[in-house]
Length: 393
Image (cartoon, rainbow, N blue to C red; front, side, top):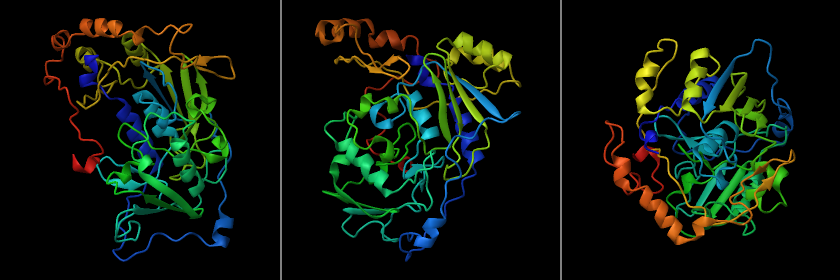
């Protein structure tokens, strides 16, 4: 759908609020001769305690933001989804070893430092990467978040009994050693220049760490209820309510490594109709919406200054994939079935004639006729090379 070629990415507003609210410190450059951060002593480790074991309740008069999305996330585990809305939720609830900041720099998240040759984190032959985790990391339920979770994440991706969307890069890892709770030693079978993209957050993807204490021993994780009704989190917020087809509520994670978010609640409503969303913005029931089209700009600008309009061109695009498989989906504890891809085994897209017919109906020239006037002609290839870090764009 070409309206996304010039999307109104109001989700950036929420991201900036969350990031500023958490008050992350400016990363400092490690001295050239410094060794990777040392693990805490036994006494220091014993002093580490979680700030809580439950999400922080919404207080009377608390600060809340309500957003609306045109689509509902299919799940929140990044290895099993390509949906932008799901990834946005993941980036609020799960974190990785590092991420790219708004200036395109790769910075640590759960890691104490970014491994480099100078600090001893990257071996001379480039085949061994050593990550040091920050001390005193905890999941939202109070369980320690350790190197064992990183190793488990890799093992779950590579387990043939699980079906992740991709194993690219992870399949180049020969082994992961965890000599202590804060040290992760990754040994590659061959040089892999994109190692920073593994176990880390990207601009529209996520390599979050998964909780071993919740998922260990399970298989078929792509169908596990955890992917649809998660119970523990490592990001700034925890999902406390997810009503299918209606809304999702998130409250602050007491154990987020950057500290408590200043927002007391984030609520996301699932609103497929832009007109309904616009009405919600006018009444104040909705604070932000990322799915308007270019034709809506004059209408929204007329509502300023009560509504702030942010227009950003980007690389995001809407697209359709033919579902060639069949699945009965996952039945959640409340009886809701999610992830069902066909009806009684009927999957018409397996017939190539059906796929050709639909492709013919969506002829490229028909799309060109309704492209926004400010758009460039569409390209048949990605504008970005695979595994390009943002700092190189």
